[in-house]
Image (cartoon, rainbow, N blue to C red; front, side):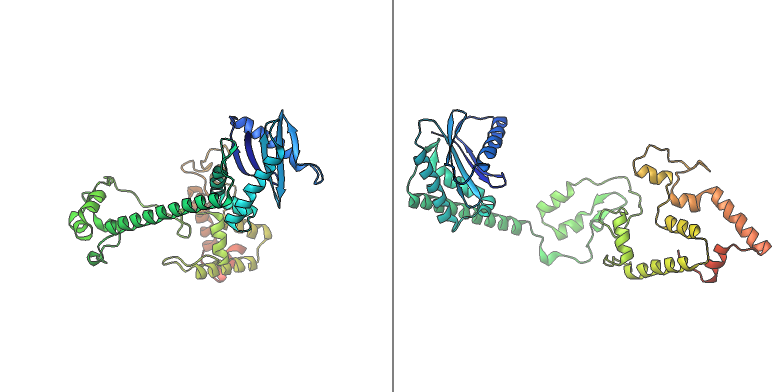
Length: 350
């Protein structure tokens, strides 16, 4: 009796397994690991029979695959070797010069052929023509089932398709089908565009009674959030132009801003800090919290909001007071800092 069949590649990858004796999943994994180590390390001049755990393992290599069968001690090894060769010939006839990739992408057909060849660990059919005829009949049944499924899908698609003659270009959004003040579907429009079954399905969709507030999203990413990778591609000009957004113009504007910023007569540390602010590289509490650090995101100056870069450089009341004092000094004492001189000589859009 054949207890199991294994197909193992030279790299130790299992391509096909068939178990005719009860083995648990843990035992199967252990068997495959042991036999792979035994068979793959044997030399080519050694015989094709191995004593293993009171059984005999008969194997034969074809190209990059090892075909292995485990049998009892009193079984005929040469007969099992012929069964292996018989199985390979049937595979070669069906696939036409069979290779390892054929068994990887069509493993289910290899199982079909093995089931026609062996039954309960014994040889069931020795005729290659009979097995080929049975497999061809099975393939024809599969193709017929696929055609029937395709025809049924076409019928369903035709039945659920919107009537083309009733499509109105004035209603291109879902919001056009909803009455906003009452948060209900507009039945008159639905009945004009869809059939009764589709209208019933659409009306079964619940609508929210509470309005949803708008929020700022990043239009160049499908998630609506701003990833650093998307911003980097935007600066390089690799992203396509979105609706109402000129990506290349924006990219050239950013490039021009940084070029003029680096040319301003300022200390290097000031320009580097400006570059870090513009690229969100400042370790604010909001940035540290986004990187999963255990910090409290609160501005230490005003303690009224989170410490983001926008808050720290623009919205904080202490920062606004500082800018007001600097503007007062510049206007009344006619003393301008190098930063103000360099930027005000030729205004740059932030």
